[in-house]
Image 1 (cartoon, rainbow, N blue to C red):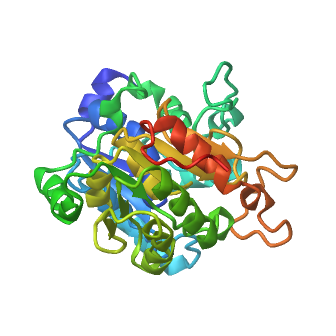
Image 2: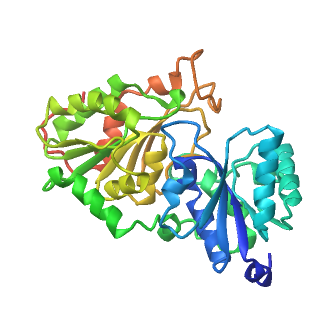
Image 3: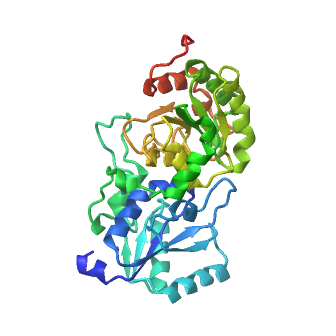
Amino acid sequence: MSASAQEYATKVLVYRLGSLGDTVIALPALHLVARAFSQAERRMLTNLPVNVKAPAAAAVLENTGLIHGYFRYTVRTRGVLDILKLWWQLRRWKPDVLVYAAASRGIPAARRDALFFRLCGIRRLVGVPLTDDMQRQRFEAGLSQGGTLESEACRLVRNLSVLGESRFDDPASWSLHLTPSEHARAAEVLRPAEGHRLIAVSVGTKVQAKDWGRENWRALLARVAELYPEYAVALCGAPGESEASEFAAQGWREFSSSPVINLCGILSPRESAAVFARAVVFLGPDSGPMHLAASVQTTCVAIFAARNMPRVWYPWGDDHRVIRHKVDCEGCNLETCTVQNKKCLTSISVDEVLVQLVGVMPEPSGLVEMR
């Protein structure tokens, strides 16, 4: 797209579905759109969350200035009246440009989407993945984390390269523009941990196939407390994860009297990000909170199932530690795994995770030997 065409646009519609993690990994793409259409009103077409643990995109992007408003609909909308209502809303707003920043669902689905947006009167479509190359992750060599595929965040900005330089590895492209009040809220809830270095932990996930198990988390926190008893712990997550987080925290309390602060359901996603920014390390599964922690440049120790291919959804940055087992059924994309009993995930031991955590932490003060 030419510079003059970008300057001409006064209304830009960004198409992006998903909740917390999906929104965070789209940040470089959204920053690129904001630079390319700095004078335009930018609204996002996104979905209403289908899970109580899944914050809406607006809860992540408020105060960033990247998006100015939203059109929302329910995923898998098929009713004629619902589709006509959405069509009419977009038709009335009259966007000049559509920026496609959605996940890959195949070329036929992309063609249907393109047809719908053109019927809405949008003449310029950017980033619609109408080729195999735009749909898929490219293979890369020499990656520090042992993967061979580009990340989903990288694929998104690659598809929008016509808009300008991606600046994918610039920390500014991952900025949530956290506000002073959000940082102040983090300081307030962490006041009981003043004087302690902080470990941020999230044990929950909205997907069964990513759940490492509460017994594992409890055992891991007990081992970490033996090694780092002087640290405090902040547990973050959705309201429904409070009980599981408290169960895991009992492992910590067996070996440390330092504060454990259960913040599940208390903070907004952005306030949680401000908490993560104060932590030495983030410990958790492949999840939205993990991506939040990476966006504020906190080192992550992350436990991954093999439901996705390596690296595609790893946290952004080079200093993270990802624990993932390769299995014969990897890439299944299952949300619920019963036949294989989550063997890719349940085969990950507490010791494996502990070794990776110790590798990014300062020297432990405890005198516990690795078991």
